[in-house]
Image (cartoon, rainbow, N blue to C red; front, side, top):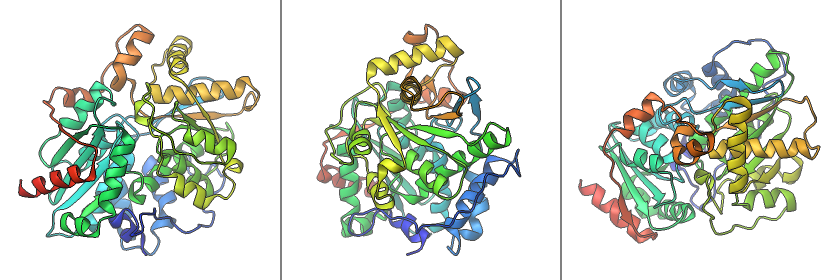
Length: 421
């Protein structure tokens, strides 16, 4: 089917995830075009995926609508950088994919129907999706998040939009939320009644645009005569890291890719042992990565027969997360969030045991603004983290979220209530 159809449907009828075909390399290591904008790189990396699709004529406009903020690379030293992905309206990397998906769905959704955007979140996805679709005519957003397992500021964000955005606190884990969402998409009658679309990274409309900032950062690194960089990507559901792998497969100048997880070790164990064993979710300081059964593992195993040959992985516990936050601020004067700290610690460990040669250029994806996790970060660095303006504004808005059981029937009941609103 077309990419547009895959974006609209989210999950395949059998419950599987859609994948694009294998693409020829479209990029090289040339420094030509250095200084081009993020939106230019986004169009270049996405163009092969949209070739021949009904959305192809709209690609430039969709990118212009979505990528209204930058993704700067901040070098901490000659060989280590942070790719700052938190300059969007909800201060997390999810803003890139969510806003692009909203731009696509505005052109794909039936004009005379109410489309329900259904999303499970472990912290940041829900707010990004809510922001992207807030007050858009013809769309209703329903967010499921695990009650008590997101940071206070994340929870406030999720419940503060109102209007066409409904936040539901689920009495369970993120994996429960994800199971409920997948169960809803697996029900053809429910899909038809509510015109459900996905906004998790199971949607190619959210996953593919995340390739753009890796292409942008990699080409800048090459153009600055630093060489071809490698990336460390903190990840929970594997969407962000898989986007980096797809970018490399499309020919973007990327050397190695390492995945950093927290104590939810299903991914790191898969890469180190070759065996995938989903596990119960463990609550950690890096809560947005608290995922025991990452959805995008299906894509990873489908695309690569030998995962250990294409990606590396390691995991970090809470004590190491705290130490990385403290050390990064002490050494560089830079506050980082707990998720970014996972990446920083994995890179430190790789260098300490000789798995990353001295002088090679590594870029860590900085996935969220530290101000979203002030109760963790501020005691460690001994000072207040300034709020981005967009985050300060939403934190001053009243918030509300309803508590529901972790069952599909509870979700269905709420969807029915929303229809009558």
